[in-house]
Picture 1 (cartoon, rainbow, N blue to C red):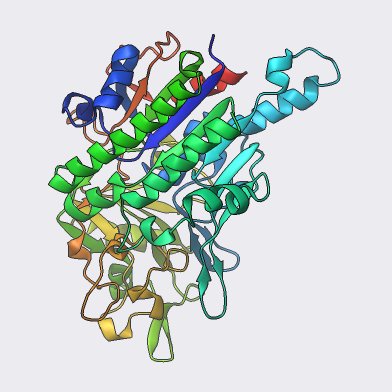
Picture 2 (picture 1 turned 45 degrees about the vertical axis):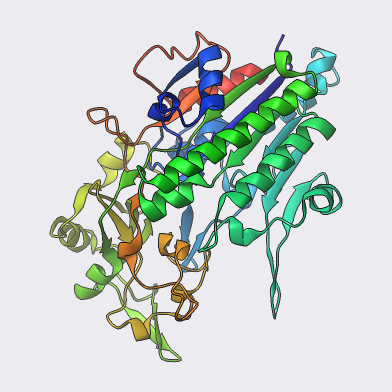
Length: 457
């Protein structure tokens, strides 16, 4: 009888890795049950894919259309906002909580489900989530420094338990030029501790570090091979802990990833292109140029290989023509295209651009690097109007982020390609399920989300 479900999100893991000899622990899980390619939702980015898996719905329903958002009313872009309230549909823990509350008085639930406990470590948009256990990074930006801190539930779980045993979670190992497998090690230890001390019936956790090497060096690099081995070691440790706790036979392990990578060789600075066409305007403040969202007719909120193009009324055709004349753009989605890919949500751009497989979109808009905004050479994941993978590098001469987008070797976000089998993630479980029909060439991550929800409801 299954009492516990552990979902491990190993970013960058692909189906072919199972047969590479690099991940024996993961391969053993697949051998015990099943494995198949998993098609991410579009766009194939962390926040949309995670939310779709947790809710069993597409971005046009849950509203997470990228890793960032643009507030049209207040002319503000923001990336990596953690609030759970941004998700516009129920996720798995919400459904558990609602069912428990609805049936509490009627005694129609079994005592085991009435006490069913959920936990989520380091998945996105989980701050203030209704999961029983939550841990997510939430640094405090003070006047003179940044305090490395994690929001947690129960209150104090991070401060008085995890931090006391494993030390402070180092955000520098989680993102930026010093990002490494140290972040995954800390999260894996926290996962083992949570299993032992909190014993959630459903626990979702995150192994992020392969993502860093894939972007820095490319998906087939030696660094990715080494990071796969490390990720497999951490997965093995989590499974071993379940054996030590005597719960392995009652636990279903699910290992998945969010997207597959594409090797890239060049970038497209969309906002600079819009500026060339006098569609994007800037303001100079203290000798630095910033986008003037109020007066701009179009700009791009970029995210890896996709870009939401926000266009003011009357300028759509000019923006579309510019995109059509830009080398390296594979597709331009308007209303019908957005609907077909289920990204037709009010938060989406009027147009969405998809790059060629070997290219990605940078957010840059300046002609002279000396005029680049203050945040350009810093690790600043919130204020840039786009995801910036160049933050994974450092210029040792200036001790700052180099303004060299050609350093980036791997990216993602495009729809998976059934012809080349590129862009797919993976689903692995030590238990077989007829519901998923995983003997087919691939499954959709929406199916996985619905399957997860079926396991607990």
